[in-house]
Amino acid sequence: MAHLRRILSIALITAGLVLLADIAVTLLYEEPISSVYASIQQNQAENELDETEAAYPSRADRRAVARIRSRERRIATLARRFGRQADTGEAIGRLSSSAMDMDTIVVQGTDTASLQTGPGHFPETALPGEDGRTVAIAGHRTTYGAPFRHVDSVERGDRIVLEMPYGTFFYRVQKTEIVDPTDVGVVRDVGYERLVLTSCHPLYSAAQRFIVFARMVRERLSPEARSAPRRSAPARS
Image (cartoon, rainbow, N blue to C red; front, top):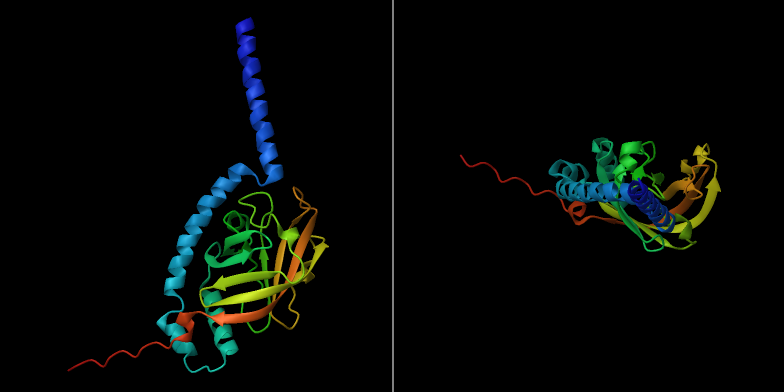
């Protein structure tokens, strides 16, 4: 009996140490189990994004913008065409920021499954380059890879980059705010190209939202989007 109690005590102590270690890792960095799942999902999303970048813009997309001289109008047209084909959960771009120690794949949608893969684009907001509108992206801070773990580290003037299959967009942080979850006005259009990042606040709580506002300062078309499709050679009789 004493031997059984000793074994039980050792098992309980071991379980307690594992639990404490899990808590410590979560407090210092992120929840480890969901992090492994998110890492697998991110790898799959990166492969998916590579395929999307190889396919977009297609010949039809490039043909649609071939006569558009303005870079801004060309980007806006490609953004709208891309948005029409982006399905929920699909990888659509890459978001990076040295201030947030972040380089992650963005997916379309903010439903539970999508956010388990990576930061999710609010589908009711614009895609980058769409006629001076707001682009909004949400992400986790403690679970599923915690892509926005250091969202509260950004300062005014910090750079954020969003790479899309049709172009790259550079933003400078304007300000940060802490708001209630019901404050949907933070993603409204304001008359210029703006990026809004949102995540739960404080850590380990969904009581409020931490918001980063960044203004677009530069945009660059992808090489494929700059080139016109080649004309097919006439068929020989």
